[in-house]
Length: 298
Image (cartoon, rainbow, N blue to C red; front, side):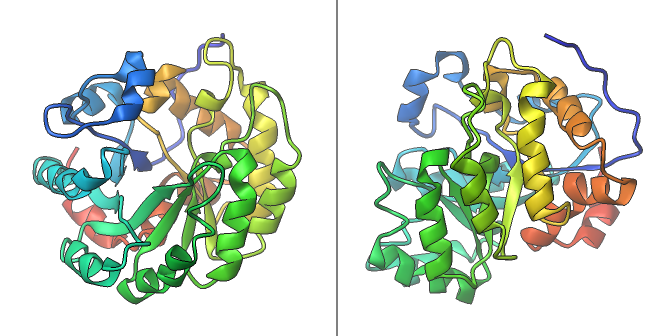
């Protein structure tokens, strides 16, 4: 396993995919299958993990607590943001398919940190094709909210169906759609990525790759072909870096993933690197970068 050194680019970071959870406040059933991270992770842990890395902004992404606890999670992260102003946005869980979704979404958007919602696709693929869910995608448009797509590669056809049914929404595909990197599989993942990229409202998050590879033996060579495909079809204006901390620690330190991501994008020009690692996430989640530069203190 190669050891990388932090790049020497004059670069700034918006981490578009950060998780925090407090097991004393919320329940996360999925952590029962992930013993190594089945504990609370807070600001101090993140600051330690990212020491020496120029993270200027963070986007918190919901962590699959129990559905009825989603407001508790939003309130928890909102409080964290009072202690670390780099938390500039929240991508929350929200029951968009519910009969009272319009009323509850208005309540959620009273919190100006909420920039979008995320829902994991169900198995096999029932949510993204749910007529009530699709019909209510218009509510996100009305509220100026984005939608983070979280699927495994075999569920990408459901993503395509959703995007085609509601093409005007803004979408962020998390973790490249979780390609089967450990198996070295490309098709039909590549075909589906090419189809999604046709809609310029769909963006893609450079995150979560190492946990789809061999946790203990992955190399940059394993990841590079997938990054090349994404950059070819989405371009550097629609790709945003995310740390996926602390889930990333199942397969890598934050620092190693950051260095790896930089290496994977080494073919980009400096302005393109700045877009991928800093500006694209701010633009997608509609965060004022000028306010970021004037208020951030590391």
